[in-house]
Image (cartoon, rainbow, N blue to C red):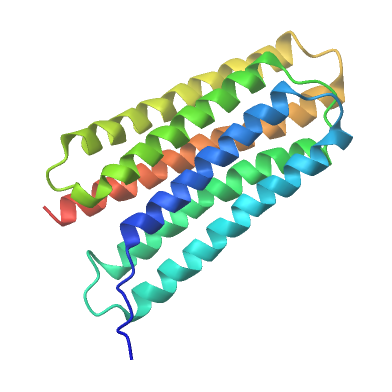
Length: 209
């Protein structure tokens, strides 16, 4: 009987962030081509497919960590990082889902800015996961974690700018203000999630140096 190959957690993490990049690209595509909320059903199905694929990877990570005799670092940290990366997928899915549920009528300029910032954060997180396997000696990995923290600060500033514009300039329609206030909150949460994953990576690095 062939020996079962050892699960590669680093590849699993890369697959999760690769899916996050695809989700962020789909979010941008959905906003750039937006015509009517009824047209969001098809991209929503594609988004759900990415999110479901992430759930499958997360399940494999959890199952392997539970039985692995010698994981590359603490089981708790493996599970925590996998969950944090899966959260990024869930939150991007949630953004598009709420655009559909709230039946948005227009796409504000700040929404496009947020979508591109989410993509930049996800791409950087993906680059970090590609370098994560050599985190003990990879300076690029550490720099990418710093970049992710700066993007989260950028997201905080953009959120304040977007909310101020929404309530003081683009405020003629009460429902527009209400809907986009909630969507902006979810967009900021996506960037918060990428920073949270970066913080877990920093903790893992410090514990294993």
